[in-house]
Length: 79
Image (cartoon, rainbow, N blue to C red; front, side, top):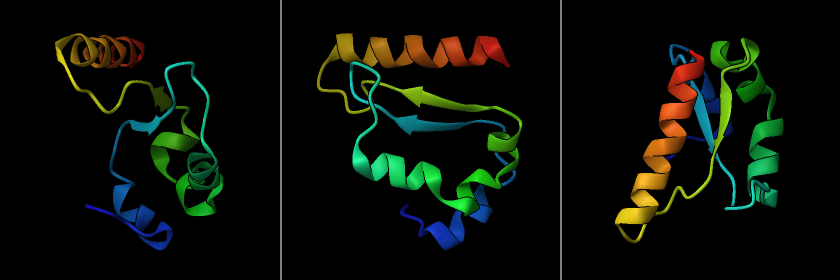
C-alpha cells in the first residue's frame, strides 16, 4: 500500500521503520526526501531511534532473500 507523506501518521503504532538503501548503504534522492518529511520524523519509532536501512530490498533469488533476512535479524537483535 502506498501512503502519502500526510498519511505517515498511520504508522505511528509501528515499533520499527525500515527504509531502502542500495547495496552499498547509500540513499537515493527519493528516500532522502522521504526521510526528511516531518510526518515521518514524528513517528514514535523514528523518534526513539528505531529507523533502520534495509539493503537488498528487491530480491531476485534465494541468496538475495537470505541477505535481506540477515539484515532483518540484525535489526531485531537491536530491539
